[in-house]
Image (cartoon, rainbow, N blue to C red):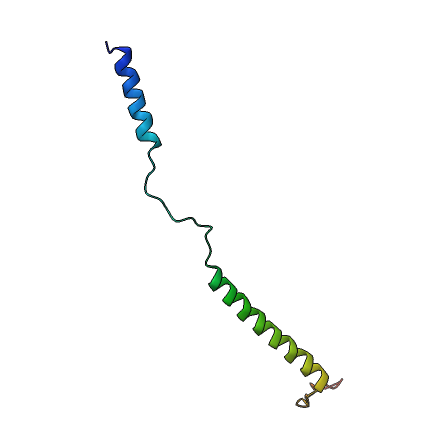
Length: 77
């Protein structure tokens, strides 16, 4: 039978191997703030210009094509 000293040494060796850190994976919550800032400013600019165009289109009342009214069938025909 194994002596208590050898069992203790084996347990210490296993604990040391278990607590050893493996290869570090990159943190999935690390962001590239420069890219996020540029993307956010681009989207904000596009939405701002789109809003201005919508407001101007309602104020200017651009002439639209005349719409053809559908002809209704005559009763009795």
